[in-house]
Length: 259
Ligand code: IPE
Image 1: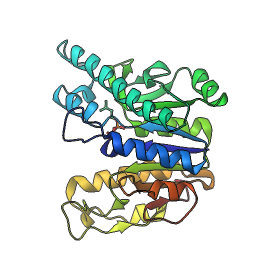
Image 2: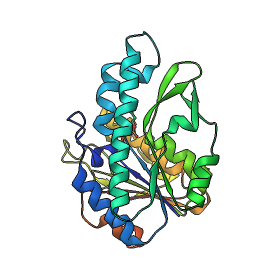
Image 3: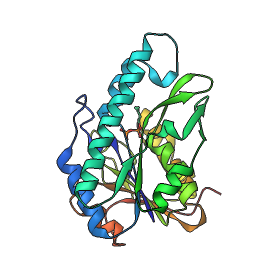
Image 4: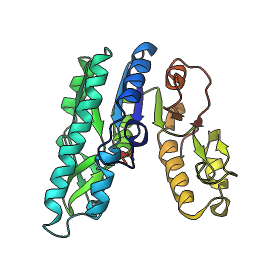
Protein backbone atom coordinates (compact mmCIF):
# COMPACT_ATOMS: atom_id res chain seq x y z
CA UNK A 1 0.00 0.00 0.00
CA UNK A 2 1.15 3.55 -0.72
CA UNK A 3 0.40 6.52 1.53
CA UNK A 4 -0.11 9.77 -0.41
CA UNK A 5 -0.58 13.36 0.74
CA UNK A 6 -2.11 15.76 -1.75
CA UNK A 7 -0.73 19.09 -0.54
CA UNK A 8 -2.98 22.11 -0.12
CA UNK A 9 -0.80 24.01 -2.60
CA UNK A 10 -1.74 21.63 -5.40
CA UNK A 11 -5.43 20.93 -4.64
CA UNK A 12 -6.25 24.61 -3.91
CA UNK A 13 -4.99 28.03 -4.86
CA UNK A 14 -3.46 29.06 -1.53
CA UNK A 15 -3.74 32.77 -2.32
CA UNK A 16 -7.51 32.75 -2.81
CA UNK A 17 -9.96 31.78 -0.03
CA UNK A 18 -11.75 28.55 -0.95
CA UNK A 19 -10.36 28.17 -4.47
CA UNK A 20 -10.50 24.45 -5.32
CA UNK A 21 -8.30 23.20 -8.19
CA UNK A 22 -10.84 20.69 -9.45
CA UNK A 23 -9.11 19.89 -12.75
CA UNK A 24 -5.83 19.10 -11.01
CA UNK A 25 -7.53 16.90 -8.41
CA UNK A 26 -9.46 15.09 -11.18
CA UNK A 27 -6.21 14.44 -13.07
CA UNK A 28 -4.40 13.22 -9.94
CA UNK A 29 -7.34 10.93 -9.06
CA UNK A 30 -7.09 9.47 -12.58
CA UNK A 31 -3.31 9.00 -12.23
CA UNK A 32 -3.78 7.20 -8.91
CA UNK A 33 -6.55 4.98 -10.30
CA UNK A 34 -4.58 4.12 -13.46
CA UNK A 35 -1.53 3.14 -11.39
CA UNK A 36 -3.56 0.24 -9.98
CA UNK A 37 -2.01 0.74 -6.52
CA UNK A 38 -3.86 0.40 -3.26
CA UNK A 39 -3.47 3.77 -1.59
CA UNK A 40 -4.48 5.83 1.41
CA UNK A 41 -4.89 9.54 0.76
CA UNK A 42 -4.46 12.50 3.08
CA UNK A 43 -4.93 16.06 1.87
CA UNK A 44 -3.95 19.49 3.08
CA UNK A 45 -6.36 22.31 3.83
CA UNK A 46 -4.87 24.92 1.51
CA UNK A 47 -6.94 28.08 1.24
CA UNK A 48 -9.88 26.30 2.96
CA UNK A 49 -7.86 26.30 6.21
CA UNK A 50 -4.82 28.52 6.27
CA UNK A 51 -6.51 31.84 5.41
CA UNK A 52 -8.92 31.89 8.38
CA UNK A 53 -6.56 29.99 10.71
CA UNK A 54 -3.98 32.74 10.29
CA UNK A 55 -6.48 35.56 10.59
CA UNK A 56 -7.83 34.22 13.90
CA UNK A 57 -4.54 32.75 15.31
CA UNK A 58 -6.12 29.30 15.55
CA UNK A 59 -2.67 27.64 15.62
CA UNK A 60 -2.01 29.13 19.08
CA UNK A 61 -5.07 27.48 20.62
CA UNK A 62 -7.98 29.05 22.47
CA UNK A 63 -7.38 32.63 23.62
CA UNK A 64 -10.82 34.21 23.37
CA UNK A 65 -14.41 33.40 22.53
CA UNK A 66 -14.06 35.43 19.33
CA UNK A 67 -12.11 32.52 17.81
CA UNK A 68 -14.88 29.96 18.30
CA UNK A 69 -16.98 30.87 15.22
CA UNK A 70 -13.80 30.94 13.10
CA UNK A 71 -12.68 27.50 14.38
CA UNK A 72 -16.13 26.09 13.55
CA UNK A 73 -16.09 27.79 10.13
CA UNK A 74 -12.68 26.27 9.28
CA UNK A 75 -13.94 22.81 10.26
CA UNK A 76 -16.89 23.32 7.95
CA UNK A 77 -14.65 24.61 5.12
CA UNK A 78 -12.18 21.69 5.37
CA UNK A 79 -15.09 19.23 5.25
CA UNK A 80 -16.39 20.98 2.15
CA UNK A 81 -12.95 20.68 0.54
CA UNK A 82 -12.66 17.05 1.59
CA UNK A 83 -16.03 16.14 0.12
CA UNK A 84 -14.98 17.76 -3.19
CA UNK A 85 -11.75 15.70 -3.17
CA UNK A 86 -13.71 12.52 -2.40
CA UNK A 87 -16.21 13.29 -5.22
CA UNK A 88 -13.29 13.32 -7.68
CA UNK A 89 -11.88 10.06 -6.26
CA UNK A 90 -15.29 8.37 -6.54
CA UNK A 91 -15.76 9.73 -10.06
CA UNK A 92 -12.44 8.12 -11.02
CA UNK A 93 -13.23 4.70 -9.59
CA UNK A 94 -11.65 4.98 -6.15
CA UNK A 95 -14.05 4.06 -3.31
CA UNK A 96 -13.26 6.65 -0.63
CA UNK A 97 -14.80 8.38 2.37
CA UNK A 98 -13.73 11.51 4.15
CA UNK A 99 -12.77 10.93 7.81
CA UNK A 100 -12.25 14.06 9.91
CA UNK A 101 -9.08 13.64 12.00
CA UNK A 102 -10.96 14.99 15.05
CA UNK A 103 -13.21 11.93 14.96
CA UNK A 104 -10.33 9.59 15.85
CA UNK A 105 -7.55 11.86 17.16
CA UNK A 106 -7.31 14.35 19.98
CA UNK A 107 -4.39 16.64 20.78
CA UNK A 108 -2.60 17.34 24.03
CA UNK A 109 -0.64 20.57 23.90
CA UNK A 110 -0.14 20.18 20.15
CA UNK A 111 0.85 16.48 20.37
CA UNK A 112 -1.38 14.16 18.39
CA UNK A 113 -2.98 11.28 20.30
CA UNK A 114 -4.70 8.47 18.46
CA UNK A 115 -7.92 8.00 20.33
CA UNK A 116 -9.86 5.55 18.18
CA UNK A 117 -8.25 3.98 15.15
CA UNK A 118 -10.65 1.07 14.70
CA UNK A 119 -13.06 2.69 12.18
CA UNK A 120 -10.15 3.81 9.97
CA UNK A 121 -8.56 0.35 10.04
CA UNK A 122 -11.87 -1.32 9.28
CA UNK A 123 -12.67 1.02 6.39
CA UNK A 124 -9.32 0.25 4.79
CA UNK A 125 -9.87 -3.45 5.49
CA UNK A 126 -13.11 -3.53 3.51
CA UNK A 127 -11.57 -1.53 0.65
CA UNK A 128 -13.04 1.92 1.30
CA UNK A 129 -10.19 4.39 1.43
CA UNK A 130 -10.33 6.64 4.49
CA UNK A 131 -9.37 10.18 3.42
CA UNK A 132 -7.98 12.36 6.22
CA UNK A 133 -7.05 16.02 6.06
CA UNK A 134 -5.44 18.95 7.82
CA UNK A 135 -8.05 20.40 10.17
CA UNK A 136 -8.89 22.03 13.49
CA UNK A 137 -9.21 19.40 16.24
CA UNK A 138 -9.81 19.55 19.98
CA UNK A 139 -6.80 19.84 22.28
CA UNK A 140 -7.01 18.76 25.96
CA UNK A 141 -4.97 21.77 27.10
CA UNK A 142 -5.42 24.44 24.42
CA UNK A 143 -9.11 23.88 23.68
CA UNK A 144 -8.42 23.45 19.98
CA UNK A 145 -5.36 23.06 17.76
CA UNK A 146 -4.45 22.54 14.15
CA UNK A 147 -3.52 19.09 12.97
CA UNK A 148 -1.62 19.24 9.68
CA UNK A 149 -2.01 16.72 6.93
CA UNK A 150 1.67 15.88 7.52
CA UNK A 151 0.91 14.89 11.13
CA UNK A 152 -1.94 12.69 9.88
CA UNK A 153 0.57 11.11 7.47
CA UNK A 154 2.95 10.18 10.28
CA UNK A 155 0.17 8.54 12.30
CA UNK A 156 -1.22 6.65 9.29
CA UNK A 157 2.31 5.56 8.38
CA UNK A 158 2.72 3.93 11.81
CA UNK A 159 -0.76 2.43 11.55
CA UNK A 160 -0.56 0.93 8.06
CA UNK A 161 3.16 0.45 7.46
CA UNK A 162 2.95 1.44 3.73
CA UNK A 163 5.65 0.35 1.29
CA UNK A 164 6.12 3.96 0.07
CA UNK A 165 5.11 7.44 1.19
CA UNK A 166 4.48 10.21 -1.35
CA UNK A 167 3.98 13.94 -0.75
CA UNK A 168 2.42 15.65 -3.77
CA UNK A 169 3.20 19.36 -3.92
CA UNK A 170 3.45 22.23 -6.42
CA UNK A 171 7.26 22.09 -6.68
CA UNK A 172 9.63 19.49 -8.18
CA UNK A 173 11.00 18.51 -4.77
CA UNK A 174 12.87 20.07 -1.86
CA UNK A 175 15.17 22.93 -2.74
CA UNK A 176 18.07 24.53 -0.91
CA UNK A 177 16.10 27.80 -1.12
CA UNK A 178 12.73 28.94 -2.44
CA UNK A 179 12.92 28.21 -6.21
CA UNK A 180 10.14 30.74 -6.88
CA UNK A 181 12.24 33.64 -5.62
CA UNK A 182 15.89 32.50 -5.55
CA UNK A 183 17.60 31.65 -8.88
CA UNK A 184 20.43 29.88 -7.01
CA UNK A 185 18.02 27.35 -5.48
CA UNK A 186 19.09 23.76 -6.16
CA UNK A 187 16.87 20.66 -6.14
CA UNK A 188 17.83 18.19 -3.39
CA UNK A 189 17.55 14.82 -5.17
CA UNK A 190 18.15 12.63 -2.16
CA UNK A 191 17.62 13.21 1.54
CA UNK A 192 19.43 11.12 4.15
CA UNK A 193 20.18 11.72 7.81
CA UNK A 194 23.75 12.63 6.78
CA UNK A 195 22.51 15.12 4.20
CA UNK A 196 20.23 16.67 6.79
CA UNK A 197 23.19 17.16 9.12
CA UNK A 198 25.14 18.76 6.26
CA UNK A 199 22.37 21.18 5.28
CA UNK A 200 23.85 24.34 6.66
CA UNK A 201 21.60 27.07 7.95
CA UNK A 202 23.43 29.75 5.97
CA UNK A 203 22.93 27.88 2.71
CA UNK A 204 19.40 29.22 2.49
CA UNK A 205 17.41 32.28 3.35
CA UNK A 206 16.14 32.52 6.92
CA UNK A 207 12.64 31.02 7.08
CA UNK A 208 13.06 28.74 4.07
CA UNK A 209 15.80 26.87 5.97
CA UNK A 210 13.45 25.94 8.80
CA UNK A 211 10.87 24.84 6.28
CA UNK A 212 13.25 22.64 4.32
CA UNK A 213 14.83 21.14 7.44
CA UNK A 214 11.56 20.30 9.14
CA UNK A 215 10.15 18.79 5.95
CA UNK A 216 13.35 16.72 5.57
CA UNK A 217 13.00 15.56 9.18
CA UNK A 218 9.34 14.63 8.73
CA UNK A 219 10.15 12.74 5.51
CA UNK A 220 13.07 10.92 7.16
CA UNK A 221 10.98 9.91 10.17
CA UNK A 222 8.77 8.00 7.73
CA UNK A 223 11.68 6.10 6.13
CA UNK A 224 12.51 3.75 9.00
CA UNK A 225 12.75 0.10 8.06
CA UNK A 226 13.88 0.67 4.47
CA UNK A 227 10.79 2.61 3.34
CA UNK A 228 11.30 5.45 0.84
CA UNK A 229 9.52 8.76 1.01
CA UNK A 230 9.10 11.04 -2.02
CA UNK A 231 8.18 14.67 -2.64
CA UNK A 232 6.86 15.09 -6.18
CA UNK A 233 5.27 17.83 -8.31
CA UNK A 234 1.56 17.17 -8.82
CA UNK A 235 1.24 19.96 -11.38
CA UNK A 236 3.43 18.02 -13.83
CA UNK A 237 1.04 15.64 -15.65
CA UNK A 238 1.78 11.92 -15.14
CA UNK A 239 4.62 12.47 -12.69
CA UNK A 240 2.65 10.97 -9.81
CA UNK A 241 1.49 8.14 -12.07
CA UNK A 242 5.08 7.32 -13.11
CA UNK A 243 6.30 7.44 -9.52
CA UNK A 244 3.49 5.11 -8.40
CA UNK A 245 4.47 2.74 -11.21
CA UNK A 246 8.00 2.63 -9.81
CA UNK A 247 9.63 4.71 -12.54
CA UNK A 248 12.39 7.26 -11.92
CA UNK A 249 11.02 10.81 -11.98
CA UNK A 250 12.18 14.29 -11.00
CA UNK A 251 11.54 14.47 -7.25
CA UNK A 252 13.20 14.44 -3.84
CA UNK A 253 13.60 11.00 -2.31
CA UNK A 254 14.29 10.43 1.37
CA UNK A 255 15.71 7.17 2.66
CA UNK A 256 17.68 5.55 5.44
CA UNK A 257 15.59 6.45 8.49
CA UNK A 258 16.28 8.84 11.34
CA UNK A 259 18.15 6.37 13.58
C1 IPE B 1 -3.44 22.69 7.58
O1 IPE B 1 -3.13 21.44 7.06
C2 IPE B 1 -4.70 22.63 8.42
C3 IPE B 1 -5.35 23.95 8.68
C4 IPE B 1 -4.82 25.11 8.42
C5 IPE B 1 -6.67 23.93 9.27
P1 IPE B 1 -1.85 21.25 6.11
O2 IPE B 1 -0.70 22.01 6.70
O3 IPE B 1 -1.64 19.80 5.91
O4 IPE B 1 -2.32 21.93 4.77
P2 IPE B 1 -1.46 22.35 3.50
O5 IPE B 1 -1.06 21.14 2.76
O6 IPE B 1 -0.25 23.12 4.02
O7 IPE B 1 -2.40 23.23 2.76
